[in-house]
Image (cartoon, rainbow, N blue to C red; front, side, top):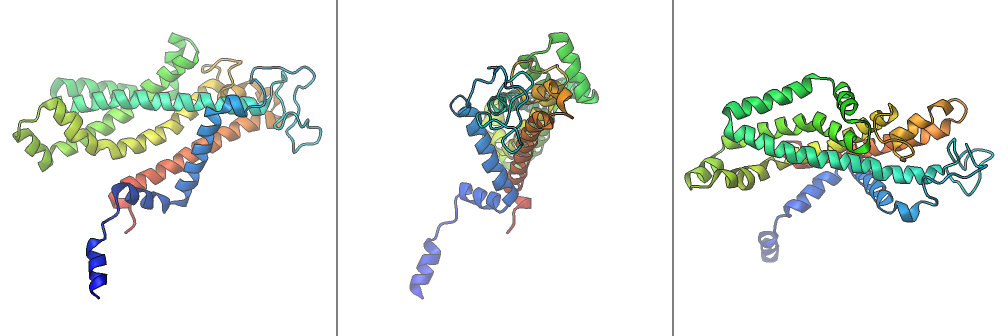
Length: 299
């Protein structure tokens, strides 16, 4: 009996990281999504090693070859070739690099700018708050695709301008989210205590308040990656994103839309890659939301 009491009293509670993983792993969809995302990231990183061919290399006499499960396929090209004889598997692998680069770039830039503007709006208030929020409202008032097309029409279609356009469109999400979270934190006792103790405004913003606003920010960032990939694919399909012969999934869809009826796999494969990637990231984002929000955790 005494040993049981000692064991009970000496047992330490699980760490916050362990508690987070326990909550996250309860969502099977989130775990599956995480594994798929990790696999896609590894494929993107090691594409030069894994891809059997150069994604821009054209093979004469090997155009529009079907994938291995269709009669008439060539074992040298597992997923077939496109209309000009480029290996589809290699292009899809390299396309993962470009799509993830766009998603991560948009997320990082939007989040950093959103943190700066959101904290400035919450802490300084007054005319600064009014100007920032009105600009964000103006951006949100214009349909996202229309605004992206307008920006790219001014700057010109390219991969960099695609990232800039999507970043501008998604910036209000982070600004408004962080502003609301920071305002809620400013009314709490620990912030009042920090102010009374003489903590400077910059330290109060970055060290005291910001760490307590990271949970919703992380969830928004995870979901923002998938949204950015979808937006970039849409712009690429319209010919306003990455330009041929860049192996970007949206641009690959645009290049092969004439083959939708005669060679459907050429268009289906990049579309399937977009679907799997976006779904996996969204599933993982849902798991992060459940694990980071104490109200959604299972007891």
